[in-house]
Length: 419
Image: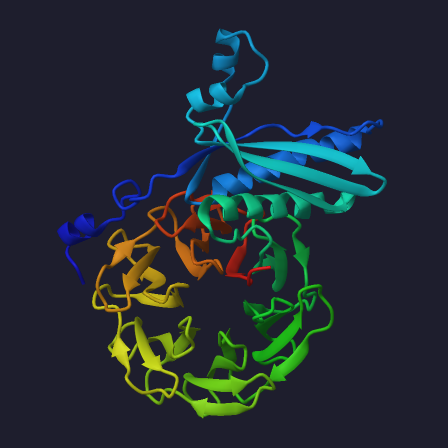
């Protein structure tokens, strides 16, 4: 346990711990540049697609969106900003968007400008069916982020999570921002711990479909679940290795909850832990050489690390009376987990893999089930801060915490691979 004074010193401060000043980006409303009549529905597509791009860019931790100041427009008696006006509002960069509608197709042309020398620095054209306008907008956002940061944006990724429906817990899949939600299991029973296959085409999960908690998988498009592994006792908390060849899983077939490695057909490859205490919640390091897990072998749940042969076990969390649900960062240098903090509730915390640098990332409600985005720059988690439990995201510094779902009873989120 650490003292309250120590806790206050370690308490997360979103301002002091964020050393990177986000670059400011303005995004103008999309303009139609075709020559034929467009419908009201087409105008709506243009409006909504602009909103998607603005939200995507604002979501990215290294960028902030600059909003148009209506007072500025009234003061200068203008209806829209020129490049100098955007610069005066603080925009380092400006995105201009144009649209064409060609039969059933929606074509988006984007241009990115540096406002200081008023110079176009990149542009692109993306075309798809009209009904895929969100995909077109996300693709443009990815290209804009790649130009500004050199990294691929996560805007085409998907999330999976559990939502309680009556007495059942079903699996849902949605876009990274919570849009396009769809239910992929309709088993009428308890389903837990969804995790994407490395190619994002399937979701593995624990289900009581046959009466006992066994390992199943199903397509991200839904369909009848297929049983992967069933042993006496529980088969729980699946975590697929980065190369997709192995599944770290909790089995109690020998009388105690231990961590095993299974192949993708559900056969036991290796037993990793052998301790009279409960070992659970395995998570892989990005290089596939280490596994972090939770064990109460020291008297309370704590996060440990071991290699993939079950050797070199060491405790990672030196302080706190309850630490659980570890997840490894994409860079491999830190592990995020759930920690019971001195305020008496569960928060997200993070620690270096050396065991140093403990930081608390949340301070509202009860926060659980952290999982990293595939680019390692964001965390998704469940929280009761606004009710019975919804999904939220934050960047890895804890900034930009956003609510994704509003139905309540949503838990166990996981983030799919880059697409």
